[in-house]
Amino acid sequence: RFWDPAEGVVSLSGYDLRRYRLDDLRREIALVAQDTYLFNDTLRANIRLARPSASDAEVLAAVERAALRDFVESLPDGLDTVVGERGARLSGGQRQRVAIARAFLKYAPVLILVEATSHLDS
Image (cartoon, rainbow, N blue to C red; front, side, top):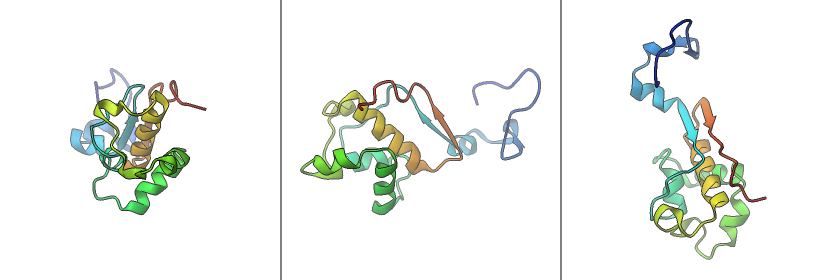
């Protein structure tokens, strides 16, 4: 929550947002920004940031939903490919799809997309 409304109520699942603790509220929201940060780690690790306990099957389902499967399958190391610092080894569209997969894996009831498709490859 960035600020409280001057009038009215903003609610989530029928509850006033002001009643949520900030940590609890953040668990309910997945955000995909125009620019996303990727760590110098594998695709799998970067996607799994959203939910470290996710199974490989859940990661693969998120990859499929984000339309990353063909790209991942084209890589010699698949999901174990290291993406480079800030995702330097990926195109802008691929980085955004990783962020979208991360958001899907989080499985939050609220998904906010901030120009999340501006760099997507066709």
